[in-house]
Image 1: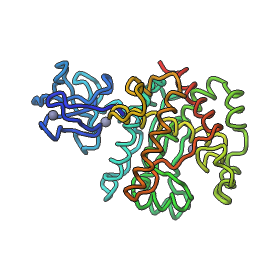
Image 2 (image 1 turned 90 degrees about the vertical axis):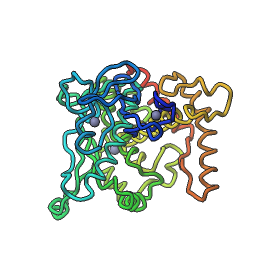
Image 3 (image 1 turned 90 degrees about the horizontal axis):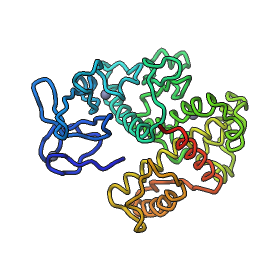
Image 4 (image 1 turned 180 degrees about the vertical axis):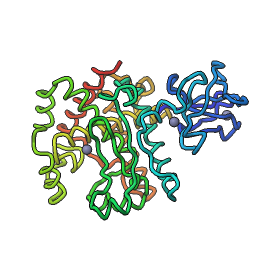
Length: 346
Ligand SMILES: [Zn+2]
Ligand SMILES: [Zn+2]
Ligand SMILES: [Zn+2]
């Protein structure tokens, strides 16, 4: 994530902010300009301080304070670029739903930020019903649970479903422990599921099966059996040699999605650290992770960075922030993802 500064007072502002805490200017993210802008508050519109263009807040921002992205005033859309991917949101009259939904929306915008920075093909299902992307944010209901049909987080033909229970810290942690995972975050879910979507677009639709199978294995392996085996017996003891997570070892599709999501974590976190002036050598400040063609160059920064943040976490008495091991086999997979993203960026 880039570092943003208020255009009025220079204060560092966060991607999620709607107002500058220092000078009180209205703030909003303009995806077309890839920037968090400061605005003059007009009667009906907000006027950009840098270019005098007029904007409105996304309807989810106006109605629920659930979005800080902007729409140009003359646009036919009520919702911002990111919110136009929503197909279903939970029933907001049910208590806690709005709180949990906002957490999902916030992570979703970080995901869309990354996709726009990479310049990957991206359209919503209104524009492209066949190949587009959409999100369903669903809550388990009493009926669903009684029928043994809980909401499953997953991807199918461009529809990403997320169970909003994942936004509840206690529930997500309970699931993490039950599944013996090292890492489970809402943002991680988005980065993983979008990997399945791009597998469809960039591997299946381009017929790139040979190179995919060489790296991740044959995806024709029966998926349901693989899942049953994984949830019954867990990952093989030696999974760390070849996989970024235990779950990645369950099936080639999951290996791809886990590697894809991890690649996003590396690039975005590296961008944040560089933007905030963390450096390990004199060349660091020129590195732009979203546009860097060499994965090795990024790895040269990433390894000392994760090593230091893990030790910082231990010093304050917290578990490692980055509980992963990048073995040569895992790095090969990340390079595969890197090359794929580089090839398909516009
Ligand atoms: Zn300010
Ligand atoms: Zn929005
Ligand atoms: Zn998956």
